[in-house]
Amino acid sequence: MDPNQKKKALRLVSYGLYVATARAGEKYAAGTVTWLSQCSFAPPLVMAGIRRDSALHKAIKMSHAFAVHIVGRGQKKLATTFFKPAVQDGDTLSGYRFEAGKTGSPVLADAAAWFECRVVDEVKRGDHTVFVAEVVAAGVRREEEPLTVRAAGFAYGG
Image (tube, rainbow, N blue to C red):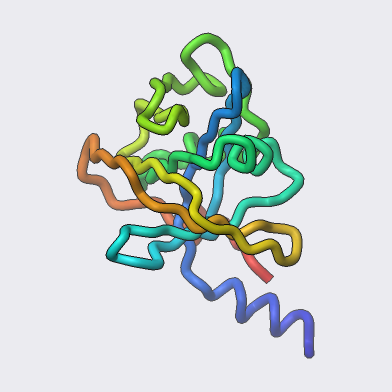
């Protein structure tokens, strides 16, 4: 397989930019994720690929829950902030205010929309774990087109 052709082909897969958060005990974690999709209507399930060497992965493994935040088209800064590990200061994560959600996961106040999930299964392959989770709470703060990897000017995959 030609590695350049593989990279080019995989970078043509469409991805959104999302911020996932979780809480394990008194520790909070967050990260920008792209490998996310709904995978069932009844019950409502999503699947999310999370890097195994991240604090977010550790928090999800401990709590069996996480929240996903839809990043709006005009919120590139929100997405890029969580490329780095989150820093908690009171009721903020890396400067973004949050409140505790139904699962205990932090729900960011600035995201266009959000949903909380409870993990029901996981698949460990490669350097990520795919968490399959049931959506147990959701909200929309404003109607806004979601930000995609391509619209943000990034190339991911490969």
